[in-house]
Length: 248
Picture 1 (cartoon, rainbow, N blue to C red):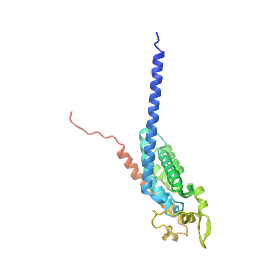
Picture 2: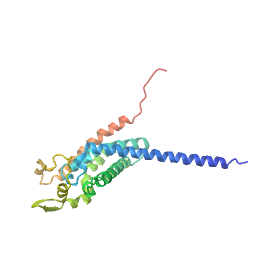
Picture 3: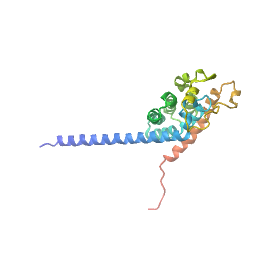
Picture 4: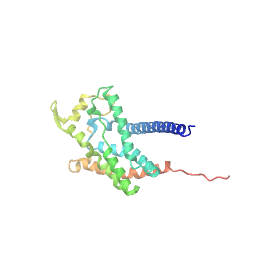
């Protein structure tokens, strides 16, 4: 009589079905995170994260980290608090970059023929890794807000420089001195972009030594601390389980 083999075969088959179902759930979960986070970035930062000539030294390094911190904070709290998974912020940033690259390669480079070096997305991976490491080693949301969120904002611009530096090189174009990024902006016209000809860096921050980058970066870093506190409490509120007392 066969008493072992059928059981072994049934168990192995059930295990394969269970594992395949897990893979399907993970794929759906990653797809949802990618779509939701990418949609948030499209609606909140828009053109700032698209065009190379809009990646300036004042607003780009302030707007992008501040707006992009929302989803990593929520994802980090939920995965760490309930699952003790130490890479919640990194996972959210990877999903965001995945959605951005799929969008820009297929739509902007493949459909409307913008070169990828004009529409590349900025990376937040170094900032996200530091944010996760601070929480993992300290197990404190307060220290993560003060140290991790501050590092999130301050590290954004240095982590882009190896991609951005070449586009800040000066070039003479029809007798006007401008950067390579500006030349790209004039060559590849965006009909839906308002106020393109305006001076993005015009403002009073030139008072601080003619260089607005350190001022914007430090101000963004301190603003990120506030954003972390706010959305950390929001994640705590939406992920908590509460019971209503009732009569039996």
